[in-house]
Length: 157
Image 1 (cartoon, rainbow, N blue to C red):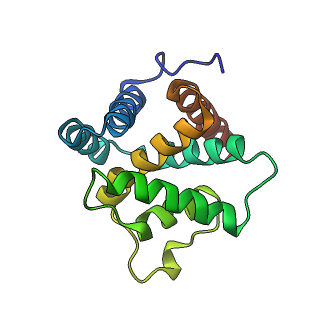
Image 2: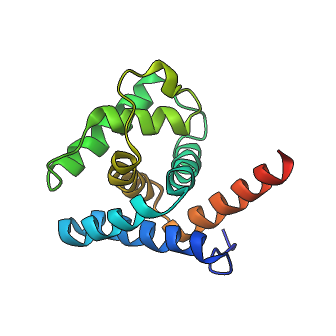
C-alpha cells in the first residue's frame, strides 16, 4: 500500500500517530508508553472508527477466504492471551465487540454493557498489534487505507 496519511488534517494525523505509538508500545509490551498513547486515542474524535476499519482490513487480509466462528475465536484467544501477559485489564468482551464491530455484526443496542470509548481506545490497539503481526506488514499502510475508505464512504453518504 503506497498511500500515505501524513497529508491529512491534524485530527486524522493525531489518530494515526497515537495509534502507531500504541501499537508499537503493545509490540514492545511497554505499559507506560501504551497508557499515554491510549489517552491520546481516547481524546481523539473518531479514533474508534479508524481503528475499526483498520481491524477489518487486517482481518480481510489475514483471512482472504473469509472468517468463520472458529477463526474469530482463534483471533480473540490469541490476542487476549498475548495482551494479558503484560496488560492486566484486558477484557475479552471488549475484544469480541471490536471484532464483531469490524465485521459489521455488532449492534450496540443489543448489548446490555457496550464498551465505553475509553475501553475501545484501550483495547483496539492491542487487537491491531496482534493482527499487524499476523499480517507481517507495517501499520502505516492500513491506516492510510482506512482513511481513504472512510473518506470515500463519507463522500457517498
